[in-house]
Length: 207
Image 1 (cartoon, rainbow, N blue to C red):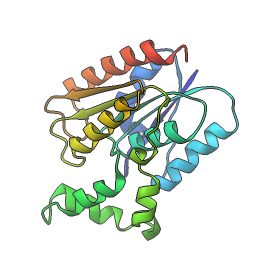
Image 2: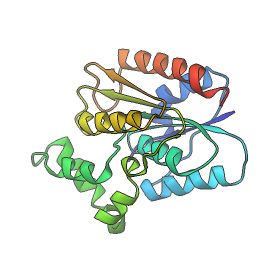
Image 3: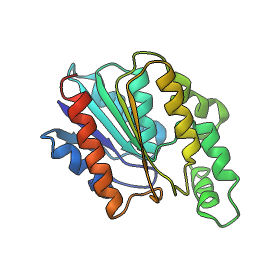
């Protein structure tokens, strides 16, 4: 079984070694593509999955986490999905970033997103690519990991996703990491590694 590891907006595979490492420790072959933006990332994933019948574990950080959840809801051959700090409602996420104070990291991130292809930040595209709009029964097992001090993605939208997915009878776990900001550091990385390893062993390897 292989794994896909997806980086966030403005990031790169080299910056998510903390995500790739736990997957490799389980003797999985990990593919970590580079991409420019949400649409490019989604297309890369579809291209990688389109030419194989093999099952994949898909994991991502931030925007990559959103792509992981969306892929698990809309494509076959996903054994399970892992999202770390990933938005689950992209329209709510844009509005959350816009509501940040001028000069804040939230507002600066919004301004960076607005510099990319304008079509990607339309209400229609954001709704079409929001994992929360694709929830249904019988999705692959999902793991959500989110910090209580995430300054870029409100934990509330992730809690809403978890509750809705669970109410539909899906296998889903939610790990809240106390004090963790948007990007994990130090002890956060150890907590994440253990959560991923336990989840994958329990739900994914024999899928």
